[in-house]
Amino acid sequence: MKIQLNNVGKRYNRDWIFRNFSYTFLPGNSYAIIGPNGSGKSTLLQILSGAVSINEGQCTFFINEQPLALEKVYTHIAYCAPYLELVEEFTLMELLQFHQSFKPFLKGVSADEIAARVELAHVKHKKISEYSSGMKQRAKLAQSIFSDTPAVLLDEPCTNLDKAGIDLYHSLIDQYCKNRLILISSNDKTEYSFCSQIIDITQYKH
Ligand SMILES: Nc1ncnc2c1ncn2[C@@H]1O[C@H](COP(=O)(O)OP(=O)(O)OP(=O)(O)O)[C@@H](O)[C@H]1O
Image (tube, rainbow, N blue to C red; front, side):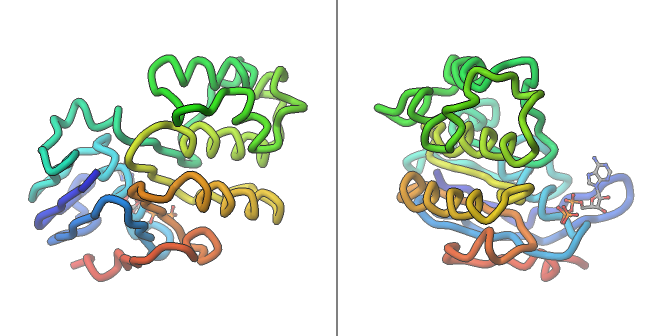
């Protein structure tokens, strides 16, 4: 997937969060969006997921160089963010199966294998509401990284992860994210150390 932003501006009420943002995100590349608290990283990531509208400029999504209708964008993007809740009444297996019914997982990978890969096999029949915050984050990362989408958008991906969880995150990125467009919104270098491009959003404040 390619995403092209041309002079994009976003405001909430009368406050511009950023303006004149022009950038082309190329398929198979990894980008970090950095900046202090409240600078607009999550807002930009939400725009890049097609979920939040812009106030000026153009944001165009492409698959194989063909423009994509906005209502189709979500099928090509996997998204993980602290503010996106899991359905806590589900067990992990129910959650993965439900997710798979509208967004398939990478070819040849089963829900059981995903649970094992994120080291949650022993609790896969337990309700998510009974998970610790780090276990919930592993479940969220599993849902997004294993989705068969050309783009993976991760907002603060290591939230609540311990050292083993952070190592797991990096091994999932290494193993499953090659040749995909990866966008990371973060303040923490550990989360985006592998990214080839760094975008400091403060450059686009006015
Ligand atoms: N739905 C909204 N309505 C009004 N203002 C909003 C909304 N969402 C975000 N904002 C404002 O937009 C600005 C950017 O917020 P955003 O969450 O994108 O920042 P961030 O860089 O991701 O911050 P953090 O590092 O704290 O996660 C903030 O001033 C915030 O208050």
